[in-house]
Image 1 (cartoon, rainbow, N blue to C red):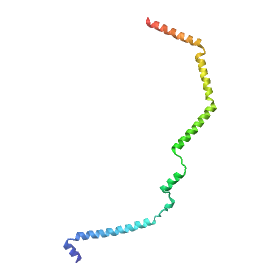
Image 2 (image 1 turned 90 degrees about the vertical axis):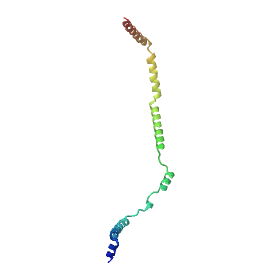
Image 3 (image 1 turned 135 degrees about the horizontal axis):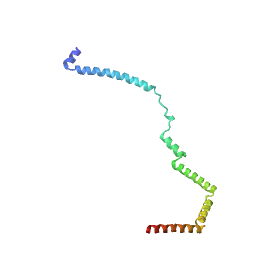
Length: 134
């Protein structure tokens, strides 16, 4: 009788939809229960074992830590020290003085030879110019 009244009022499609939704709902309830069991099995971590942002800031401000500028300064000072030590060990200043004095002697020492070379070059230039003029 119930189905006859439902059909007579034209509610058959609505009743069918309600039945479909009831079966879908029961399936979803079962799936939620399964997922709830899986979630309950997951161990909740103890958050006291982890560092918070405020802990990290406190640690950084209370302790020294290396920065890029600190590393650059340290490297520069060490390199400067080593270069100064190497200069002192090698006595570069005296070696430079020796080389400069030898250069001065070589460039101004034998002026007669230099005069001969200049005279020879000038003679060759005059001959070349004379040959071109002919």
